Length: 214
Image 1 (cartoon, helix red, strand yellow):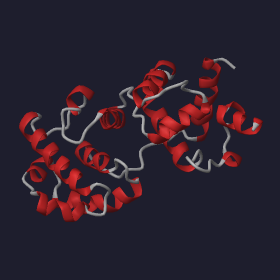
Image 2 (cartoon, one colour):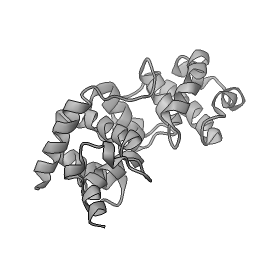
Image 3 (tube, helix red, strand yellow):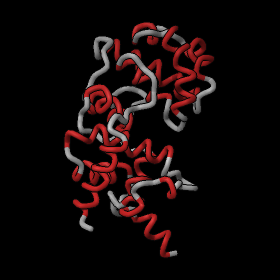
């Protein structure tokens, strides 16, 4: 099977079985999504969704969050992983939005990564989810699943995986493919005990092929 055939098969599968895949983070606007994505680093979306309602109620926009103090914000996110750092990042992010971006969330990766707490992965999430830009955020799920399926080859870093995926996925599908791979990794292709018996991609999966030979 050629690389193109593998991609075509997998894209066709997800197009039919997960046509409406989208982020599981709950948000109403780009600012709320940005807050949620920053909080989601090394934390489950479920936990974030339990935490954000209180944050959004107290801080509905960048200006109100920028005026907060760490002592005020911390209690609202103390159940999230790395709450001290994320408290600082959120307030710093909001202050920069107000001071540099007219209290609006910018929609370019180059601008987003200037914000405290925002790296390339987060910037790719924001631009792809909000604006359907062809940017691929590679988290642990995407990195693992794309390697197991053979979509990436010898990728050592998230950026290498991102580059390979972008090269082969049609531009208009990149923003959706991001969710396909994340959700497949979250619910089927688990890190320690993948549910291969429930997966419809075993016929093209290099991990399953290798597992069978063993």
